[in-house]
Amino acid sequence: MTTPLKILCVGAGHMGSSHARAYRQLEAFEIVGIVTRQHQSCQALVAELGGDIPHFSDFQTALEVTKPQAVSISSYTESHYPYAKAALLAGCHVFVEKPLAETLEQASELIQLAQESNRKLVVGYIL
Image 1 (tube, rainbow, N blue to C red):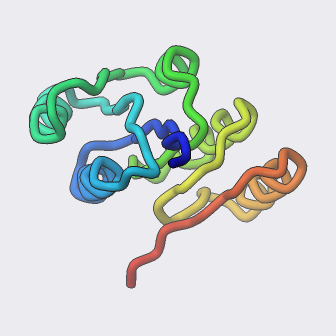
Image 2: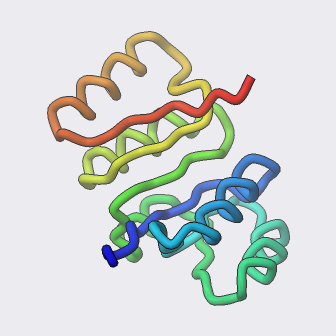
C-alpha cells in the first residue's frame, strides 16, 4: 500500500465540497486542510467529513502549515492564478477548476512553472 497524497482543498462551495467529499473517499488522498473565506460553510463540510480536518481562512498560511503535496482549487476565479502559482512554487501538484487564470499571460506563466518544476497542473472542466 502506498502512502496517501496529502492534499489541501481550497473552497467549500458546491464544487469544493464535491471535490473534498471525493478525496475523503479515496485511499490515495489525505485531506490536510480546507481553505475558505466563510467559516460556516467550512464547519458544515468538516463535520460531514469527520470533523478532523483543519480549517484555514488564509491560503498562504494553510500552504505553509499543512505542507501538502497537491492542492485542489475550487474557489473564486480571481484566486485561481495566485493560489496555483503559490502552490506550484511550493512544489505541489495542482488541480484547479476552470478557468486556470484570468488572462492568457497568467495561464502561460502557470503552465511554464508546472513544466519547470515537473509538477502536474490539471484544469477541471465537467461540461
